Length: 477
Image (cartoon, rainbow, N blue to C red; front, side, top):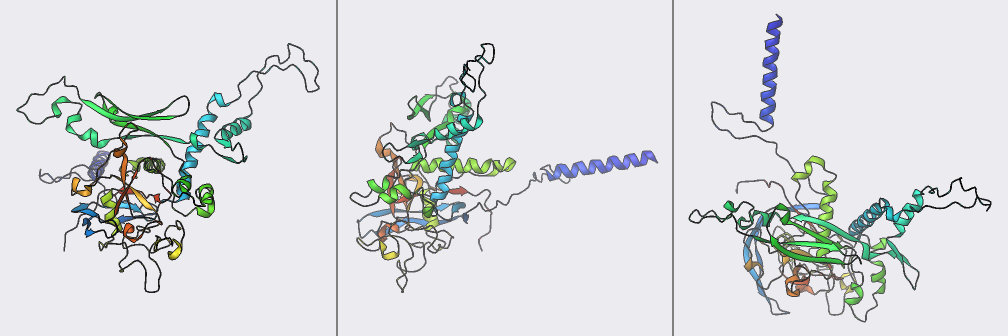
């Protein structure tokens, strides 16, 4: 009887193991036929504050000649895959979280750095009454460190006091964010394969195992004076580490943009308070250049990944949208010239659909003088707010006059992270959507403009996107 029970147990265990193996990706072939390897599908949850823009196609650009500038915007039929996009522009409140994270990281590092502690050895020569102490009592004994004093010293080290007004403020020059990005695209190209035999698949030619392949990568460091040095170096390919690019970016926005963008204008209040005052929390952040916007995307990705655990490997990184993705999303599901379905820029009652400059010199006709709170105008059919006006938005695409004509017709883009030593003309990045200071023609979905990657403006902000994992297939009916 015991033997029978033992055999039954073995059978049950074997069945359970087989079932487990099949559910975890093992083959469940019947009769020796190949049936494939199973797996568990994942329905990616909607990221916080983002909406899904489903894959599709559009005629990018416009055939109409711009009546104001007489320019033609290049056109091409393109297709893009699905992606998540911030429903609203990144706000001051969101970007300040990034700035404060960098500040707190510096403080944490300094708390662990003995150089910011008080490790001096004090000679106790007097007691509390001022009388000399006996030499053999506590002579040269280190005083215990005061953690509260160390903490305060570290905190104070990232602040400065204005030499004239006495105002205490963050030392923006110290707020540097360092990050690394592995370049999957470069690593995938055949000419950069570490194994020489994989660089050319044409078997009519012999592979030179001693061929020296040069690779360029971005690197950065901070010198002894606290200055950031960024350069592109070229060296022989040696390992996968050659595809790691290092960036150091000062993350504090250029609040002086309100003064420098508008000469002889009383904009001091915006320079001093727009980014820091809580009244502007829900307004789009401005004064952030393209490099800072990319740094924010990287930080936002790492911030998310640290809270996901093992599921983090399935998550695509936050990034700036490509120029094609931005226009596709802005046009809505109907492919409109402007994000809304109605003709014109205002209703019959004179209510405007976006924050822009309706008339010459009249910024307030739409109800706003500068930027407005994000999301106060209606969303387009994709559920996205402020895709026209409020602030223009950075894209990841470099700006060329040829535009989409020089790109692929599938997920088109052109990217180049220009280093400091590159010609300034290579640092143009495409900007889309128009802003609060722009006329009607500039806020059209197809209108293209540019700014240099190291320049922050009072009328340029950004929003993030994330590629969707495993977009669903469906039959066209």
